[in-house]
Length: 371
Image 1: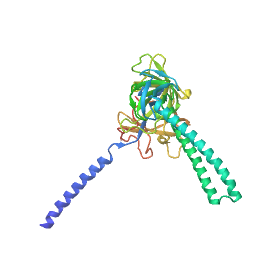
Image 2: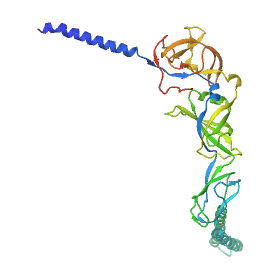
Image 3: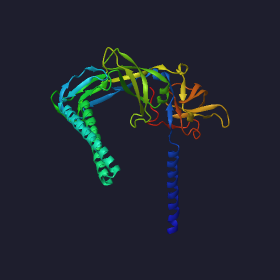
Image 4: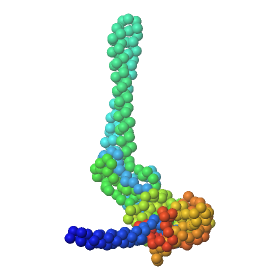
């Protein structure tokens, strides 16, 4: 009976093995995930509008470095100030009193030193003649040196008191606009407590989000046209100040900071929403050029000179090897002159392990969309 059951068990094992192999085959033949990028041209920079938000190019909270009673605040919200303009003043009397006292202390210390120095001169002569002992001469020298140290100490205290007196006057470090005030006249204010907030009135920044498919093209942009939702009809010219090097984990975009002059007919405040698009490109002959990463290239035939790329058919999610004509080698990638169209998906990694018409899966958060 035991031998009679063996063929049944053996057949069942073969059937299960067949099912497992079928499942593995299905897994192996499923869509292969690929790293891909959507072909972009510098034209996109002029056609696309990148959202962003304004911020001050320079912003600072002004505060006194000493405590005291504020006697005068000479600015209000909205006022424009020049560099060096007096913003607020503390009651100077306590600081002036310290200066006057220390000036008197210094005069007394200097007079005492002169007297001790003259006395030491007389004692020194008597020591040299043998009338006084060396010990008396040393004691006289020590007394004189103590008086000299007292002069230096009072001078240091006086310099600090004069500095505190100067700190009683708060001045604007650069031209700007007062956007907030935090203290009123006759209030007792602590050192480092903000009195007003000052924004640079001459320039403003906007930080826009650029997709990773286009970030490599941003260095080609010389100027960008910037508009703000709150200021319809006003278009400003911004230049790139900084290009972020780390993409957002959620949006896969890079922050690009633009700086521009404040318009004469309006005021751009921090937090205003706006948008920017490229208006001037440093390489006009590349304005319609297509750029792809170097890693997307492979020979059309093994050992051949003709280069090709794997192009993904977005409808069928399959790849096909397509020959391309290359232009210049750029710092941002390779220029393609023939063989590709703007918006097509190109595989950028593992190009030597794909096969013609192989089904693939584009990354959900891949290179982003350029539409």
